[in-house]
Length: 298
Ligand SMILES: Nc1ncnc2c1ncn2[C@@H]1O[C@H](COP(=O)(O)OP(=O)(O)OP(=O)(O)O)[C@@H](O)[C@H]1O
Image (cartoon, rainbow, N blue to C red; front, side, top):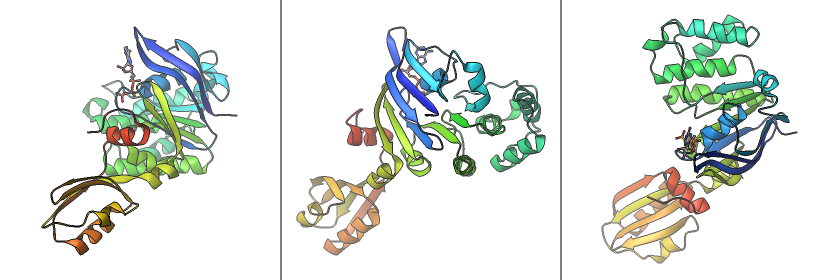
């Protein structure tokens, strides 16, 4: 049985499709990434799973149950982090989490404190004094605290700094080790390559691909630009299997490099003096354009 499944799930807002005939399956115990740019349909899909909005057609199922018809049963099994956190402003994080704990049938306060400590969020400050990252951390504590079978996390790292991200990645890894399941949406290809087992790629409301993260990692590339002091032989670069999309402008080379770009720099230095060398990771749109032929490369 799949932990989460959509069958031709479609949501039309007015005349515009939020998601269009989405069919995907999430297996027990996996970290499933849902990768897409702004407005791709990630939040729409997650809100349909949570029965916060209704599909125009198709179905969303969690644990084999219809997300609308059996929403009461489902909620007990899920930890949900929404894309927007709205918490009461004049009380503390501790009080908010005590309230959520009651709704979940009682979670020990030491568990709440443990999670807050790992995410480094102060539970005693009034919510109105917390910044966006800390508000999201309170949201993460409520999502994780009852050890749900499935975590549905809507862009949880959007506001987190590096330390916050690392703490969350560890929590996700622990959930996975315990055989529980995580569905996490993201705009970061890097993040998906690093923490997921499989990735569903969504663009303009449509599922473009479902891929194993190992394949994404193996294909990861950098955009490289370098300037040589003088003329160099093009063939030596063109014959490298890790280099593609070469563009020459006199003594300047632009290309895409799979694997470590340092290796290319070393090769280049053997040919001529290198005046300038820049390597950068592609944007999500650039990667989408190259991998799946959707969107526009910048
Ligand atoms: N309530 C709404 N009314 C009208 N259109 C909406 C509504 N919610 C979402 N949309 C549209 O549906 C599409 C998908 O939006 P959605 O928020 O699901 O994408 P997303 O991938 O979560 O993007 P983001 O990262 O910006 O949250 C977008 O074109 C968006 O403008």
